[in-house]
Image (cartoon, rainbow, N blue to C red; front, side, top):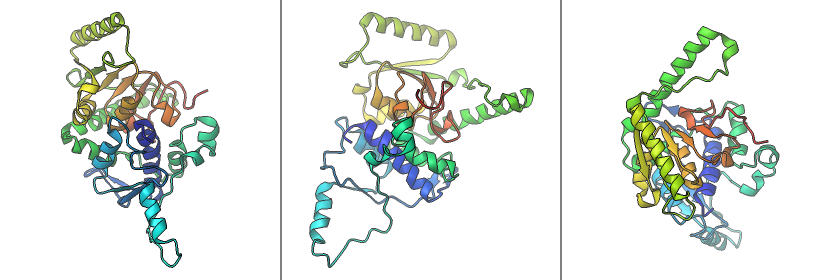
Length: 314
């Protein structure tokens, strides 16, 4: 729990999918507000106060930005509730409760024997039943980005790109017929909107050989200059959380050698982005991919990462 990947990319992703799907929540695409009931409380009954907090602080950042009115309780708070009701003559009434058990997910078919990703046990059945809207994660994404100071125009970039992409796919289908439904259609991103961001790890423990790092940066810079793309190189550890989300929200292509937590963060909050890295977010969703079209803007109909190399790992 005290790791961004486990807390957000596993637990929160699956929990929000299940919460939204359980209420057949719809998303108003003008306000991006979900019809799902407001989440008022998160109780981590088996974790101390520091048990769900990661060292970089992204867990608390997400919780307090995307769910600003939510109260978080720990095992000490739960013990207080037990103590106050131990005589059996009173009880706390919680109107609606969703119980999430990470270990129980591994007893399911998907997580237990196919992809070993706990979130899949939540969203997969609900999607198959038609109870999850494609934009189910968007309210969470927008609240966090808005908290970080990202403007609406930037948040909408992915929407605009996807609309153009859908039109291009429809045009190809009309020209080639229904038997070409799996045809790969290039994502139409204008040169002036293409933003390539390379996350350097040279100041961290895991990093590239200096010579290889220089060659990579020089190659990316040369390509960006030749094609008229914007190219940025950053070291995430030197940026504030607001700045990191700001960069993510406008990037269309990410490149980094190893960065599991930030990779998951990218895929949760970047809509108009194609990321090239080790196959990181598949750890959550069970997708095998060298490059991922992220979330609902370049994604499968389920609003999750899609691939061209297979849905589940071998």
